[in-house]
Length: 321
Image (cartoon, rainbow, N blue to C red; front, side, top):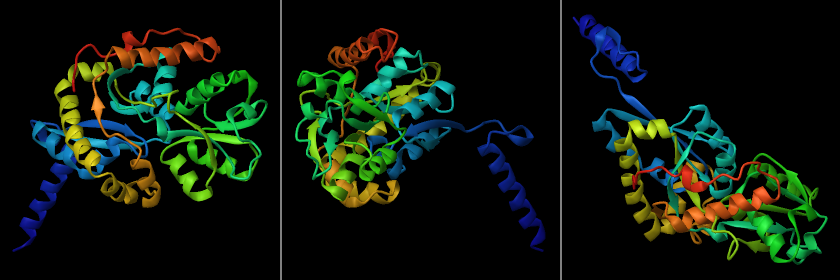
């Protein structure tokens, strides 16, 4: 008869499902653990997610990976602070705002500079030709974003202050694009792939990118208690990421094609963005700490953060890369 084997198979499937959600029914000896990873569109973690290689590397260790997408760095860091994820990435400025707010996160590694991946722009037919002409103008951007720091530095470069412009704060890059295209602001600031998407869609006049002003680094951040208890898991993640980055650096256009369906972003947009990016993850060193400290001091001076935090105290004390 076939009934008994079918019933056995259903019981076995139930046991497996129970183990995956951590219920460990009927006294099962082991429980698969989960590494919860936060990510944003267009980053080295996106590529790693697309390969499935991290999952393969974690399986023999009794772990799996679960991925959570966020609209921007501040939201991702908030989830990290709340204990909803264990690991994630954010740009330099969101990381600084998190440091100043006392978020429970530590720097684990950084990516290489990506100054052309951020920009301040106006419409193609705008009468505004220079950063200096942004005085008293409305500019769409977000609080604590990497492009906010770029704007601070770009204004200083031409003798203006951040207080000389009228920021229009939005919560995500898609809203920045929509507000810019509505004509309700004079300028906007954004980052790749949204910057690249805007450039392809409307050919705006780029007033300034990050070259010479902001390295626009991405940082990998972790919950310190989780990292303390699971260093081998973080090391495994970085080892797999390194392999993926080597391939992506050598194949930027293929990387764009790989990411397009995963991110729901046109391959043309990603080809533009990947062409100006360096896919390499590096340890946090004194120079990178100094870069971050400079961002802290810039926003503290503007009274946009209240705590003159020391970035060196937020770096994890052991190299995991």
